[in-house]
View 1 (cartoon, rainbow over the protein chains, first blue to last red):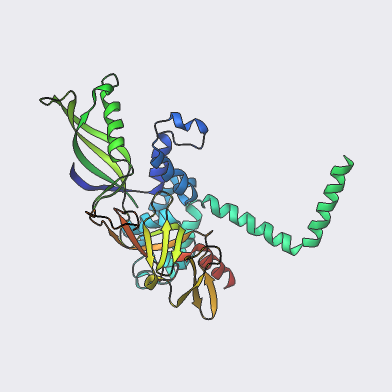
View 2: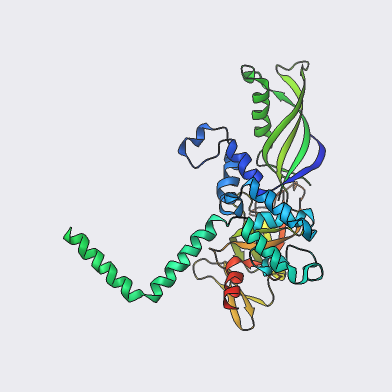
Length: 158
Length: 199
C-alpha cells in the first residue's frame, strides 16, 4: 500500500453522514441487504446520529461559512464549530485559539449566528422537552396527579 | 475529525469475483482489506469514498487471479490536535477516564488532564471503577454516564505492534487518542448549559 496524499481534504460530520446514508445505511431491518459494512453502520448510528450533523443541511453550512467569513476564522476552527455547534460562549472559547485577543466581545455575535444558522442536534431537542416536562411535573405535581386520576376515571367510565 | 486520503494499493482479486463488474469487485475487496482498520499515521479507515483508477489486471506466474493496482480515496477518522469532540464515558478508574465514540474506543483522559482539583470515589456498583468529581469552589461536578463529554485532542499516537503481548494485558490498540478536560467548556455538556442558566 502506498499513501499518495495523506490529506486530500477534511470532511464535516454532515458529509460523512450523508455519504454513508446514501450507501444505504438506515435503521430499517432490511439494511442487511444494503452494501454497508457493520463498521460503517456503527459510525452513523452509534455516533453521528446523536451529533448536530443529523439535522444539518448543505444550505445551513454554506450560510454559516458565508456569515463567519468576516470573523477570519481558521479552517479547522470553522470545521470544529460546524461539527460541535457550540451555543454558549464558554463552549466556543476552547475551539478558537486566543479567543479573547481576537474576538473580545464579538464572540457573543458568533454564538448567536451558530444558534441561528445551524439546527440543534436531536438529543438537545429531546432533552429540552424533557426538562420542560420535568419542570411542569415538579411545579404542578398535585394538579398532574389529579389529572391523571381523572383521566384514569374517564377511561374506566368508557 | 474525518478526512479524505488518497491511497494506492496493489492486490489480487480472487477469480470467484470474475462474474461481477470490475469496479464493484474491487470496491468489495478494498472494503474487506481496509474498513475498520488503522493505517499508522493516517487514521482509522471508515469508508471507500471513490475509486480513481484501476490499472493492471496481470496474472502473475503461478497465480490463478488477476492483480490490479488501484488508486482510491478513503474516508479516514483522524482528529487533529486541538479538536473538540463529543464522546461518551466508557470506563473510569483511578488512572483517569476512557471515552468512546461508538465506533472508536481508545480515547484516554489521564488523571492529570482532568479538571483540577478533581477527586475520585469508588463506584458502589462495580469494583475497580470510580466516579470522578470536579471540585469547583466547593461545588461538586460529577462526571456521569449519561452525558456527552466534550474533550480536546491532546495527541494521537500509533503504537507499534508488540512482538510479544504480555498475558492478561489489554488488547492491543493501534491508534490511541489522548484527550484533556482541563479547560473551560470541557467535560459533560450539562455542566456548562446549567452554569449559563444559573448566571
